[in-house]
Image (cartoon, rainbow, N blue to C red; front, side, top):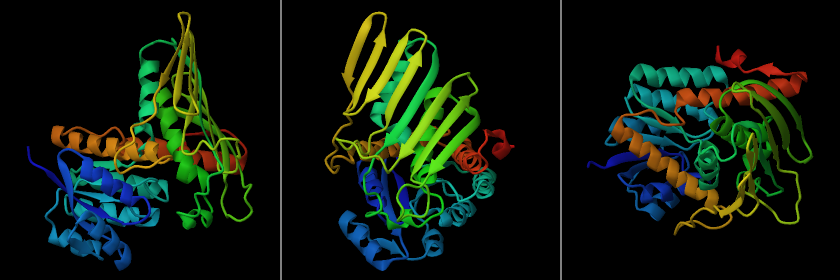
Length: 344
């Protein structure tokens, strides 16, 4: 079976994880990299043995010789790069958030649809193996019909040291982290009709919000709470774990700190260790995130081979990005906001 050749644009903080993931992905390899910073380009190229190196995305696409592109840049560059890939007919993976605005996001999805090429957003949190295990338990019917859920990510981890730009944007935790938790809520409980959100900035040294609480009214009648914080100091730092609480008609599910999955029903309580694999290149506590990168990349290659739409396609991700937009509007206006306002 032919190997899918890829190009990576953006050699920053998180892209190193993606390069490790691509090296492990069955049926794919990266043959070219691109970054405007020659030092970062050299560092990644040397570490992973990539000789084709570009400081211009236009030059990269003009030379070609690859089957897909992985865009691992900051959000302002996503639309021009995705539209450039579409003009060249290249299937594209784009980092989250998909775009700075819904208008940009819709334009990117439309450009790839018109070009007839797949677009997948690198929304990797739903690919964490503990989250997949929770989804499988819910789908098994063990806790009956779900009526309430909570997706929680609370930490005091210093994310600003590795990604200092996070401290400078007017939008922070919902756009950077909350988007993952909101996508998990969609993955577990289905699409959302309306959002009620509240935000707060606790850390005076940053510009945006570092605490957010969102209540989602799902179309299936489920209510969920999504809460995120980078200002919560706990006895044992849980970063980067996402914790879950799910109540059903026959029982409950809890994904607790330390990757313990508790499924309680009339038959008793089953506790399972769902800690992710520690890949050879990974390191705790990041191994949960790192494994999910590898899993979503394998999903992309499998979808390319089968000609099917990825689970986190651009089209699907518009529904997650709409939750981000609705959350910010709700917090600003102090009222519940219909999600359809952003998708219509």
